[in-house]
Image (cartoon, rainbow, N blue to C red; front, top):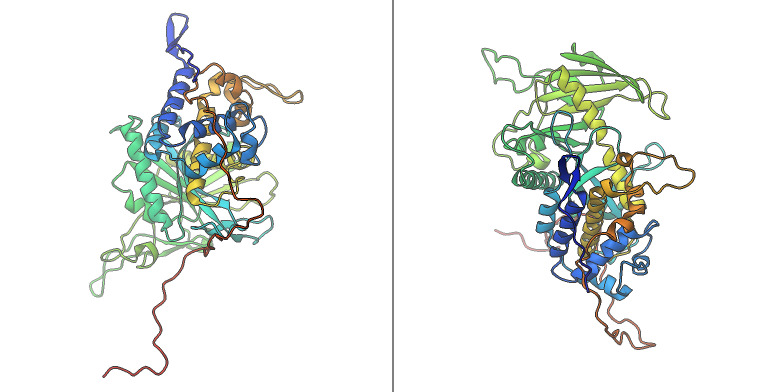
Length: 485
């Protein structure tokens, strides 16, 4: 029988009343339970077991031993493999939560890809080659796995928290730029439907790391109230605006080259700022306006009608005095989709780009603590269900931040409640859960199936699947075939 506990809607503080954070948490948990049309009780209890487990998750069977999971390990795996989740409703619930903003009231969304590596799973379909950085220089590798694209709202200041809003698994034959543009468009649509962004509000800032086609994303998302900011490689070459056309010949489309690796091609920057920081020393940012990449009919622009467009933006070169563990830091090149950024914009942009690395803390917490990539699941559909369970668990931890206690170890320093990390909030989530209702029903008595007879072998071998994209080849003409005509 489900436990029902009344939760007050308001909490009095003097003469004023503020919302009780338990209300938002209870409402989200109930909406999550309604988003589970099949095996909902088992999936909900699996999420609670993930939240209340005091140690890092290594296997799913360990979660079945938690007190919050009242079913056996068979029901757990059955829910992961055969359960159903209403992803549309769940995405809408995540978009309806409180969204952090920067000091100017702007929403900042970070987009990045994290891989679930599966190199030893030849029977798992839809695996692609995931780029993984090595420990040494030029030690990057391509390892088979399932890449996932995440979209998260960033907070201000030094923090390890983000607000993850969406996750999409990239298939081997997907165009990453097209999938990312569609994902971002849907996230922004949900934010506007929830009332987080209205007409007249500052444009939403989209922050990308290197590897994305920034000009393509800015062109495709031009009808939305967004601005694109991303990092470029240090060997890129952009172009200035074209000079006035001459009397004869075709009008030029591009001006002189701006080579990142050649300072001789750099004119005087339109804007130069210097900021003193505690961690990096003096940060100097130089900006050049109205620079665009030279686009050709190739890749994502192959099907573009007519000549490729001119997508102008602002290039920012960021240099710092020192980095932790690096005596000679390299400059960081950024591209901003607004062609005329000013001094105030430059300082805000490079600081918000550094906030993008908070998403790396979220990925590390997903993998090392919540065990996102720990289960050895075969089907990508089961991987999607487990990924969204991890996202829902993280969302509940974020909602429980005002309710968490500082359960620190003897050697840890005390921190204020607003500075607790996700791992510290997870330590006391079992106490928070005890004060809230559990919508999941109690398990019913049942008998296990007969299973495979003792001594019999599995005669149904799982098929093996290729990794990566498969190029279509034309049928070769048989040797000796007569030529037509």
